[in-house]
Image 1 (spheres, rainbow, N blue to C red):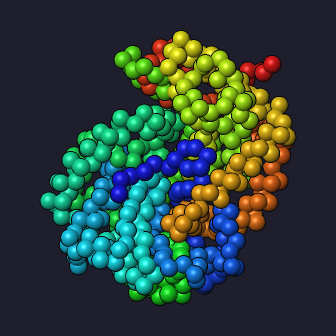
Image 2: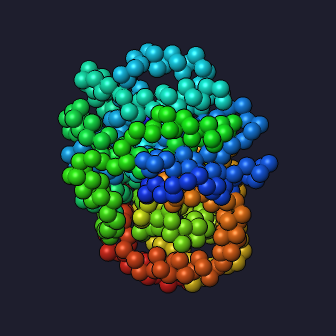
Image 3: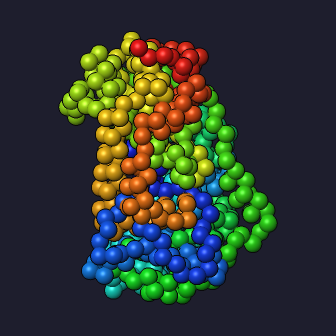
Length: 484
């Protein structure tokens, strides 16, 4: 039930969640099926919106014996303020500590007795609660999800106990350098704005959050128009609609408090990308961890798939995994041949209205950091004018395979439905994805690079043995470096 930030590599960026307005359709309507889910026996995604704005979306597989059902909420850490940062994640912890109808022990016993699985996670733009169970137990699972979302007791004793639990979780996250670097990257790229805050929140907030803060967050964000009940597997759409009407039909359509609505609208304002950097030098570390990013694309941007193809061209590489230096990625070949890094990971992270596109570099060669960054950004410059058809086709094939492989099982399908419906209002069919990705050419990639990479400000996050990383203006100057 730990939190999870929106992931930052090719496979992960296709999985989770972002957030925009819920679907406004008032009658049941079929939706096209999701990101490259294999077409099987004519299954499809259906959607219905209740009178209060609560949406139900399902993909029914009649032969499936189990189902995943969950509630995707269009609110995460981005829906907080500086004073309440960490509230969404705090609520996730408290959701399983007892409700008005069930004690914590009763909750756990009900799930165990049905052989089910109950979990949750928080991201910058979503909070998700989901359960996996046999089809016959779906009504009980929806009852439990409804109960913990609408009737959690939020007892003072439980709040105090969870403070120490969350602080320990924060300590564990602080040991994961990738998490630390990307949290700092968001903080500098979107500084002073909701998207720049961490999911767990600062320690002082964890220690000071009170029951009133939690209740206010629920009243502001847990409204019907910002929720989607998703079902994937053996649960028929009509049955889930009936369950939604029973358990979620009385949810308010929007916050009743005018000030709460104003706060919610403010948090939705598109953030400004800030060309900037944050450096934490620690010479006791043996490696340097550096992330460099430009402003990327949103989930619904026309260049969403082009950004992913471009990212795949840059590629990922890890010396420890024994990856061949003769991979399709030109950068991996160069970095390997010149011993510039231990690994690198390109990423295209999308949110509801913006994103981050860049690379995460890890090197134990502190005196060669300048070369590593220089030649990495020279590869970015090449993307604006020298991309080949062969590398584009290779990247497209990798992207299609990644999309297909990410949808293995009802939980993965449910997550794909939830993320797409709550973000864009519809779910792409595999035919659409095939057509869009297949139509991308080297000209499209170069046009994307010219628009998003060439001579653009960058955000830099660097931690560790980073003395050899030259100043920001030198790095920024490499964004117009001609390649040879």
